Amino acid sequence: MRRNQYQEAREERMARIGFIGLGNMGGPMAANLAAAGHEVTGLDLSMEAVKRLEAAGGAGADSIAETVAFADVVVTMLPAGAHVREVYTGDDGILTHARPGTVLIDSSTIDVDSARVVADAAQAAGMAMVDAPVSGGVGGAQAGTLTFMVGGPEEAFAKARPYLEIMGKTIVHAGGAGNGQAAKICNNMILGISMIGVSEAFVLAEKLGLDHQKLFDIASTASGQCWSMTSYCPVPGPVPASPANRDYQPGFAAAMMLKDLKLAQDAARSVDASTPLGAEASALYSLFCNAGNEGMDFSGIIKYLRGKVADQG
Ligand code: NAD
Image (cartoon, rainbow, N blue to C red; front, top):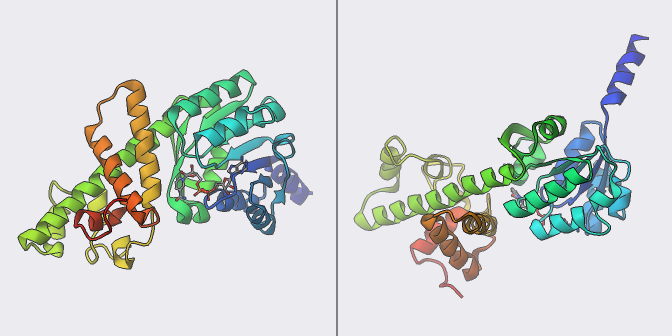
C-alpha cells in the first residue's frame, strides 16, 4: 500500500519533456532528463543525434508538432538566434503547437534581442518562458553540473527550476527576459579580455627573461590574480589541468569565444555601451580564428600573440 503511494507520487512528478537540438550540449542534457525518469521526446536535424537520445532512454520525433504537442516542458539547445526565432515563432513552430501553460526553456547562447522577442511571443501565447544559457561546456552537460544564467519572470523561473537542477548545479536568476543572455555575454566578455591580458603578460615576461612559474607565483597571489591566470593559465606548467598542458585542445574552443564576444559587441551597439576592450578582444579572436584556429582552445591566443601561428588569412 505504502509502496503504491510512493509510486503514484513519483509518477506525478514525471513530466513530458520535448527537447529540440540534441547536439554536443543538448544531447547529454536531454539524456540526463531521461535518466531522471522524465519522458523525453527529442528532435534534431541529425538522425544520429536522435538515435543517441533513443539509446539513452528517450524517444525520437519527426516534427516540432510531434515534439511539443503533449509536452509539459520544452527545452531548446540550438546554435544561434535565427534558429531559436524560427523554431519558436515560425509558422510551424513551438508557439503554434505547444499548449498554453507549457514551460519553455531556451538554453542556447543567443543575442539578447532575439531572446526578448521570443519571450514576448511566448507570453502572448500563454506560455511561461525563460532564457537559460549555460556555462560548463560538454563536460558539464554530461555530468549535469552546468551553471544556468536565467532570465524571465519569477513564476517562469520557479517552474523551470526543477528541470534546470537536473541538468545543472548552479542556477542563478538574473532578472527579466533576456537577462540570462546578458549575464552570459558580460561574463564571457570579461573572460576573453582577461585571457588576452594574462597571455600578453606571459609573452612580455618571456621577452624580459622572467620565468613563467615565477610570474604565476607572484601574479596569482597579487593584484593580477584572475580566473584566466589561476584556473586556466595559458602557459603549460603552473596549472596542470589547463589546456596549455595538452597543446591547447579544448576546453572552450576559440570559435565559441568569438561567438560570445560578437554577441557582446552586438548588444553593446544596440544600447550604446562603451566596450573598447571587448571590441579589441573580438577583433583579436577574429584574427586568431581566421588563421585556422577555430577549434583550438581559446587560451591558445597566446600563440598568436607570440606570432607562433600562421598570420591571419
Ligand atoms: P551543436 O551544433 O553541437 O548542436 C546544435 C544542434 O541543433 C545540432 O545537432 C543541430 O542539428 C540542431 N539543430 C539546428 N537547427 C535545428 C532545427 N531547426 N531543428 C532541430 N534541430 C536543429 O552545438 P552545441 O555545442 O550543442 O551548442 C548549442 C548551444 O549551446 C549554442 O548556442 C552554443 O553557443 C551553446 N554553448 C555551447 C557550449 C559548448 O561547449 N559546446 C558551451 C556553452 C554554451
